[in-house]
Amino acid sequence: MRCHKSKNRNTSIRWSTPLPLVRIDMIEGRSDEQLKNLLDTIQGCVVDAFGVPETDRYQIVHEHKPGRMVFLDTGLGFTRSDDVLSVQFFTSPRTHVEKMKVYKLMAERLEKDCGLDPKDLLISVFTNREEDWSFAGGEAQYVTGRLP
Image 1: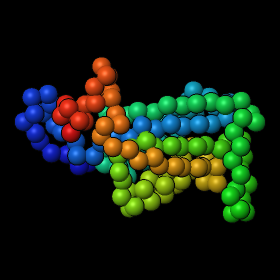
Image 2: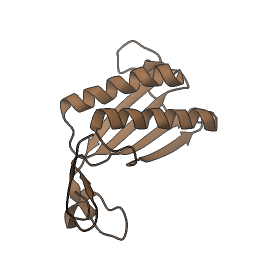
Image 3: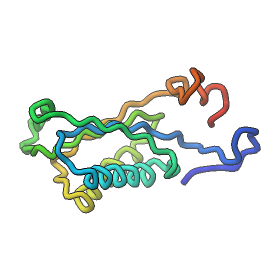
Image 4: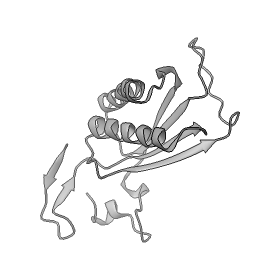
């Protein structure tokens, strides 16, 4: 984890790598236990690839009725099942290496820990800046200095 001590009056530790917001879309039908396992696995990949603290966890799950998610193969020659999973990261700028690492970790760990075929995994990253986040109170905490 990348962190450094700070004498900021609001916190004793400041993180140099801001957290991502993760949106997960799937077809409904997974059990609560399966869903928890998916979310925990995804969080572990985020922590390992992006160097964020485990406690910075922002995940939103959207479950869709069958037929409401259409994910073709983009001409790559594979088929997807109803287990298809779309994972979107809304995050501060990440390096090419970090992105490639999170893609690889998610494919490997979701297959190993959750039984998800890697062909059923679509990942996209949306980059934003400090002024694009307000965690509460109508304040952009990264801009005002309350968060690093």
